Amino acid sequence: MLTYDEALAYLEAHINLEVLPPRSPGVARSLDRMRALMDALGDPHRAYPSLHLTGTNGKGSTARILSALLAAQGLSVATYTSPHLERINERWAWNLEAVSDAAFAETISALADIEPLVGAPERRGAEHSAFSHFELLTAGAFRWFADVAVDAAVVEVGLGGTWDATNVVDGDVAVVTNVAVDHAEYLGPTRHDIATEKAGIVKPNSTLVLGETDPGLAAIFRSAGAARVIERYEDFGCEENRPAVGGRMLDLRTPHFAYRDVYLPLHGAHQGDNAALALAAAEAFFDGPLGEDVVNEAFAAVTVPGRLEVVGRRPLTLLDGAHNPAGAAVLADALAEEFPVERGRILVVGMLAGRDPIEMLEALDAREARLVLACVPPSPRALPADEIARAAASLGVEAEAGGSVPSTVNRALALADEDEQVVITGSLYVVGAARTALVT
Image 1 (cartoon, rainbow, N blue to C red):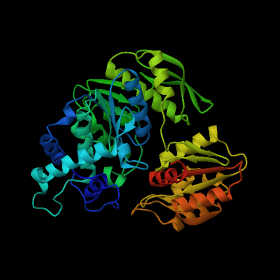
Image 2 (spheres, rainbow, N blue to C red):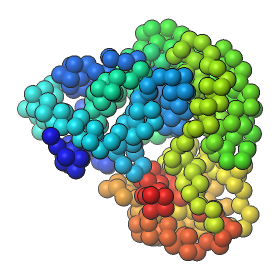
Image 3 (cartoon, helix red, strand yellow):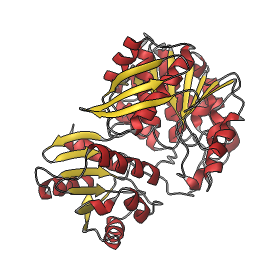
Image 4 (tube, rainbow, N blue to C red):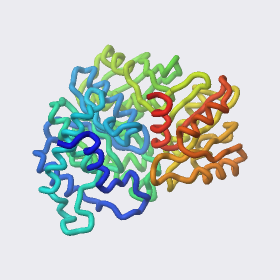
């Protein structure tokens, strides 16, 4: 059996689209590889019902809230999410606890034994003869979930929907958070293209819980073939959403019940929308309301690392994985409401290639900052720090180009007064590296 480090090395030897630059030669758009691999494993993804999530932003938070609701209802719950912040184990969770190193290595070892016997059907004899990094991770997750005999799996799409490796599952419930322009090089240049790609997770006989409210985009999802569609505003929503100490106080409406004064220990009004979506999805899965005690218990225990997470107090230090303009705008709104600038704010920002740094900085309201410190995410796709610094300077903001995430974070903390803010954002790679330096 492989050791944990050997399992990681085995995965890293496969094509990883998360670290390849846009438009690089990679894996063809097909589910044939995954279907062949799942067949060889005995179709473990069919051993339990699934709730399948897609969307541009909010998937990770919604998945964690939904998993907490299912667990509070007494189920044994698996959660598959991506990417990770600090360790790859975070992607596979059982009752919101990451897989152990030993179980992870054992599962990857089984895949390593099977892979040469399966092959990738449309690539036999081709240059790339192996499965992708994400396909193997996804197959491993489904196998491990079956091994621990979960009652349900919350499965987050990696990218898009139709051709994502997770789309071998037939989700009893399909959940869509929202649609914005992101990963256009893979999914298409318009929101219509992206919505069409994401609608591929909707299967016959499923219930679609739809968070996107744009009429033109909602129509794409409605026509995808679900047996039932539950829509934000019409069927569910967050009716009241007030800041509270350490989080939000919510009034939530679903097709089955009105939940009043529910405390959610997450920052940002957008988390109220994610909570309403997750609650509607949980009710769709059970086809009925959840008890108020169950909802209160589940929400009170929710944590979402790296999403407007407070990791220091003097100076106030916040992490948020706002990695696209829509997410950056949501972060800016949340900061304005819950953490308004009183003395000064230092932004630590790092991005991946393909982002327009001016667009991102404008979405972040960077002009509100007294200083922007640009850093280099730990990724081969990192955007050079000096490009970000020049973009900030063009907006009239004082800026410096730094180096690694830890060194830039340390400089920000050294420069900040105790009553100022340090906000670290721009890429999940940045947030993960900063969290490792500051929390663990």
